[in-house]
Amino acid sequence: MADVNRGNRPLSPHLQIYRLPLVAKISIMTRITGVGMMAGGILVIWWFVAGAYSPGYFAVADGLLTSWFGKLVLIGSLWALWFHFANGIRHFFFDLGKGFDLPVVARSNWYVIGASVVLTVLTLMLV
Amino acid sequence: MSYKTDYNAVAGLGRANEGVHHFWMQRLTSIALVPLTILFLIPFGRALGGGHEALIATYGQFGNAVTAILFIAVACWHFAIGMQVVIEDYLDGGARLVLVILTKLFSATLAVCGVLAVATILFRA
Image (cartoon, rainbow over all chains, first blue to last red; front, top):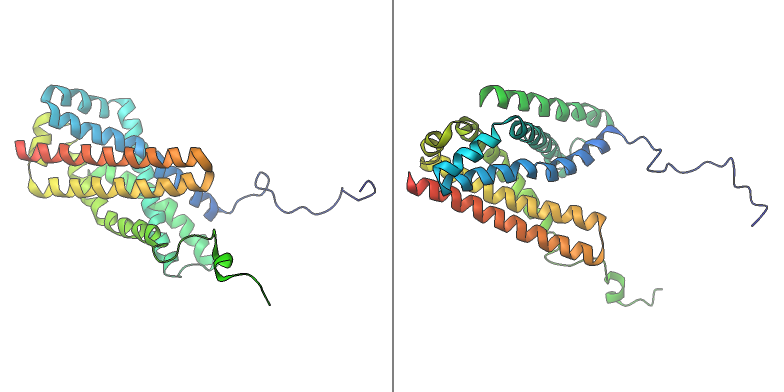
């Protein structure tokens, strides 16, 4: 094996150096947002449990969720929710076998990213 | 000609019959969550930060309480099966088993806490 040419040969793309297409990055983000939004989920459930427990305890939960820390977690989770939601809608189309052409995917990538931002801002403004 | 038995050709490749149940439930819960997410967020966002009176005023209403209960139950279910897929994709053996069990217990506990809390608020209002 000593005289085998080991240099200068094309290598298959390795995960660490291969630039993932945007659709793959969005796919990974959908997982991360799915798991990550549980941070907000736990806070919201705690808020309800505190509300069922007593008005005094609820004041603590309501105060924490509207503090800067609570807002940070909730707004982050809200964006994660809408991102996951938007890519989930796209996956309904993928499941139906539609939208797999690369130019369509290139466009729907930005629909997903745009929708996640627009829906987050809309929710914060209207709700 | 292959001398493999029929069994040997499929052993270890996953289940027959109910194999797509998990996949299908993920889709069904996703579809349910599309309207539920929107219907949950609107009253929740309005009640948030309004103190105990706003909580009672919002979730003392039957429709808001039912939407919240459905949203919490379906979202926890969706989380449980989604998280299981994530764990199964990245982990093997004992760690996989333990984390999947913890995920199920955690999701079920969270769902029961959320559902009972909203129901309690509704019945007390």
